[in-house]
Image (cartoon, rainbow, N blue to C red; front, side):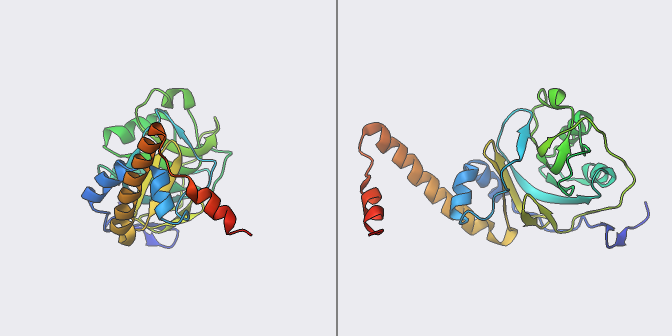
Length: 224
């Protein structure tokens, strides 16, 4: 294949991915908890839905940018992805043409890809519901894609209202999707683990009827 290295028509696969041990830590923490300790600025906007069986996922971002309505570069990304990658696609939020369907999803699963996120539309909703693989998108349409390019793989993109660089940590569950820059992952997960443990303790106190609620009145007192 000819080398593609022009703006809007380029592929870069040699980038650092978030450490696998940190990915496994992230998989055990609810996305909402990670979002809280990241100061509620790293979650995708509402409106992204998970198709197929609802499940948690975590992995390094393999970033893809396509022309709205075209999935040629997504096909190439599925061929080049490493096992465990989360393929995340900036499709411009376009909703009139699907970027992926059941066959591509089944192929992604056989390649060990962790999940696929589309800032745009998908199709084959009924078939996807039978596949044990997370596909996240803004919505669905029966219209299929074109395959003529241009596009990019392995460069920074915008998706869900956030900037995502290749190798960043992407995590998702039925609540939604969140991105953590690779340089911040270790610290954010340390904080998230501590908060998750605290919330688990609060749940025990709720069931025991001992949950301390003094903070509510203290917060109200600060208003006067």
